[in-house]
Figure 1 (cartoon, rainbow, N blue to C red):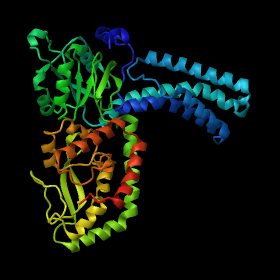
Figure 2: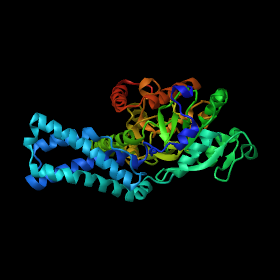
Figure 3: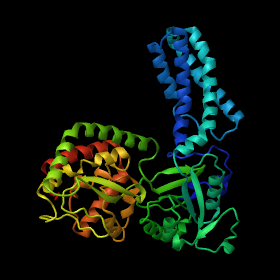
Figure 4: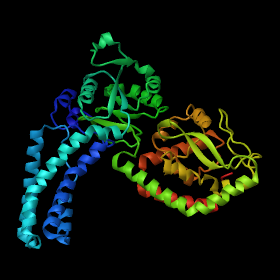
Length: 473
């Protein structure tokens, strides 16, 4: 993509005065887009209740119109007070004028109390202004709610890379901590200043990402470096870091690829989780609701299976095994014990057909997937999701991450009780590398194409599969 086709020069991007986006995964961004529409609706309902003693249906309809006209709200956190004041006033004049003209033309304004409408004309912009100032005051606390900052590196100390670094460091409410630059050239040749720290060479990139616990990687390399870029992407597939291109790049095989901005600097994601911002909230909420209801429904089954396991063979009822979870962090996954052993070491043999380690009851539990039911507790804990890539034992992860490119990308999301691979023929033992490759291909396909509808489809296909499938043992 040439600059004439929509890519701005790095220098001009650095000087642009417009508001910087905080990113979709920042709680402040979610609050901002709902804050002003919510303030206008709240002030309308307050005026209605004050003068009418209730909120009649016409006010509910007007609230829907107001919300539709103003959502999503504008980004104002980093603007000056005067800019916010002017923007609120101009925005409200436009909204009030449009609604007033429509109400007069249709005669619909007669459905409202004139006192309530007059009060709302003054209360609405004042409420919106106070809401903006309140969010600005609470912004540091909101940022702390999201946990530690995300560590980032920029690959390529060029004009666009240094412009991005300046943007990140100058953003008041960004959750990004810039660890430094990675480049193949020496600091003396680059003329790097103290403001831009070099932490290593490009050929050390994968190692630097792991040792520095980097979560965000920004590739700021020229298009002429396409072969080198592809090599870098291959090397980074053994990490769980999110990868973005600073524009003017050639892009292939994207995982949730989409354009965006970081502190006002446009970037293009290469490898990202689908569960960011609103989508992440929807995913988590659906997991909590469904897992809670399922646990209530299956409580008698859980008790019966627990008693049967305890009486069937010596050993614990619940088998806890270390698995890799979100971002490759180790988690403990719960299962009903189905074997005479509880392996969790450096070498683990997958269950096979006629495996002598499987108890008679365990064979039934595995075939019916009843052994997986305790994992709904993992979902409530936030360690797992109902739908996602199935978690593998740590020993298997360490083996296959060296053999299959992109293996660790599946850990950009929480592991699931069931997944896209399992409903497409990859349930049970993966005794060959080709079968594991097939499972990973479906896992990555799930990341690329996730939707709530896809999750529901997988759940229903899983139920049908458990009834008739014979691959699990």
